[in-house]
Every structure is written in C-alpha cells, then in structure tokens.
Length: 384
Ligand SMILES: Cc1ncc(COP(=O)(O)O)c(C=O)c1O
Image 1 (cartoon, rainbow, N blue to C red):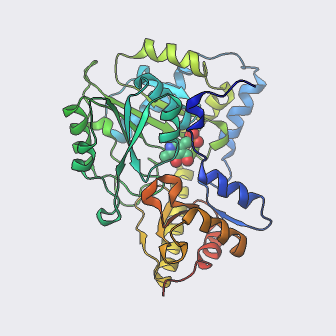
Image 2: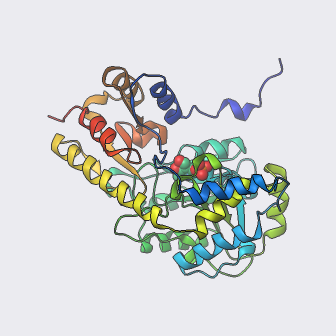
C-alpha cells in the first residue's frame, strides 16, 4: 500500500473525541466531555429544512450560499457588532470547522506560521498542520486568568508569521476577551501585518459581559482590512448536525473566496441553509433560554467545585467550566480522565486536549441537563 501523506502522520488524536467515544461505549455514563447542546430544536427550524426537501430544492446553491441567508447573517452581525458589513462579505459554510479550514486555506502557504492559543480548541493546530503550515502556541497562563499578554504573543512573531487566531468566548476556558484587549490584539496584527481569524462560535453566550468582535476594530478599506470572522449555528441554535455557519471575509475578496469554496465543498446542503435562515430570522427566545440554562448550570457546578475546594476559572462565556484537578491527576490528566470514567462513570475532557498548559485541568461541558451535571461534578474528589 502506498504511504499516507507525511503531514497526516503529524495530525494528533483529538483527545475530546477519544474520551467521549469511550464514555458513549460505557453504559450509564454521564457525558460531560463534549459540547453538544442538549435542547430540542424549535419546530419552525425543522419545518424549513423539511419544506426545502418537499420542494425538491436539492440542487447546487451559489458557492457563497443562498442570498437571503447571507443577508440574514450580515444583518445579525451588523446589529450585534455595529459594523457595516454587506451580504457580499458573508460566505455560508459547512459549520465553523469548515469555515476555519476555508480561512486557513486562503491565508496559509506551506511553512507559514499561525499563532494559536494554548489552551485552545484542538483543530486550530490540526487544521493548520493539514495545510502544511506551522501552529505556534501562545500561552494563556492561570496566573493571568488565562487572558493573553500582548508581549508574549509579540515575542513569538517571526517573518513567517501570517495569522493570529483568536477565540472569544473561549473553548475550553469560558474566558471572554475585553473590548480593550480585542482592540490591542487588532493593533498588534496591524503592526506586524498579520491576518486575524476570529472564531466566534460562542458569540451568543456571554454572561454579563459583552462579546466584542475584532471586526469592530478592523479597517473597511480593501487591502487593509485583515479580520476573518468565523460564525456557526452549531452552538447558538444547537444545530450541530446540520453543519451550517458563516465566514465573514474582509472586503474585496469575493472572487477568490468563490474559487476556494468551489474546491473545498462547492456549497452547503440546501435544507441546512433554509433551516438556518429560519433560525436567524425567526423567534430568538430559545437562544436566550439556552443562555440562561448555561448560566444556571455554570452557577450550580461552580458552587459544587467551590465546596470541594477545587480551583476553577469563573466562566464569563461559552458553556464550559475549566477546573484544576491536579490534586488527583498525578501529572497525566489524559490517563486520569479514562480512569475516572471507568471508576466513577463520568467523562470530562482532559485539559491536554487543548495544549500543554491544560495539564492538570479538565473541561466540564455545561450544555446538558442540570441533574447530570450535578451528579457528575459531585463525584469529583474534593481537594483536601
Ligand atoms: C472553538 C470552536 N471552534 C469551532 C468548532 C466547530 O464548530 P462546528 O460544529 O460549527 O463545526 C467548535 C466546536 O466545538 C468550537 O468549540
């Protein structure tokens, strides 16, 4: 058999999937290791997808998506971020993961460096490696509440650095960048002539702090603008299986974007696009109910951790709690989560899934039922 491509050998196992698949195969296990929103979809979203199939509207759509959906994404972004973007800058993509791959494909040549957060979402490194680029991790330290230090990032910039990857609200940390930090990060990108890819998967879920997109501080001038914004409906509307999101690009890139999209997935499945249109333009109350559910879960889980003396980062957004279990993990949290699943029937994502700084930490998903969360977190060993 011929060999697989060399860069595929370097793509690591996703440790979130590793533990979650072990949990799914464990009868009765409480699964707190994956970010899958648990609530039922409103009927009008399902009906819109079904109506598309009933009409047999199953042909290719334009590469960038159906115009009404592009406009709906643009309108939502304009309203939330007070930025003047038009629908021509919105590309409908097959979920945020495809949006990230799309953006990186546009920006990274082999050997180019991309700055990614440590701890950060695992596919930032995996996807850039698949494109023969070099992920360079910038540290987010517990001592600074896992917020970035501009000087740490600046020190890592070389002539090969092309992209700064941002993710706020953060998976796995639940941390949110302030408006001021966001502005400084955009200024850093301008100083060093870098692109920014801003992963805003969890934009709908912040608790008492605003979500400020880097796009707010970007130039509007083609050739100067540098921010790509990655959005998804997977988390906001709980549409993970429909695979639908949007990549908002700087102005003046439409033709290049069409060419690259054609070569990656051509276009997104039409029923998913109509379901997404219904989600964006229909009633929004279930997004706020989801937010309140996550907030309640965060509060309940935080109280249990506090009572047990387990240190954790107070989550300001997303739907994760980042907790320090170094008192029991023995310096190998990846092995410890497997042992804990086998002995206690609960799965957490090991912090090492997100980078070396995650050693000794776990990510607790807050998006399921409150009862499961309480049962699961209560089984964690207290810190003496
Ligand atoms: C930070 C982040 N980016 C991207 C993704 C991928 O999202 P999607 O399901 O829309 O591809 C996830 C999913 O968990 C995520 O947490």
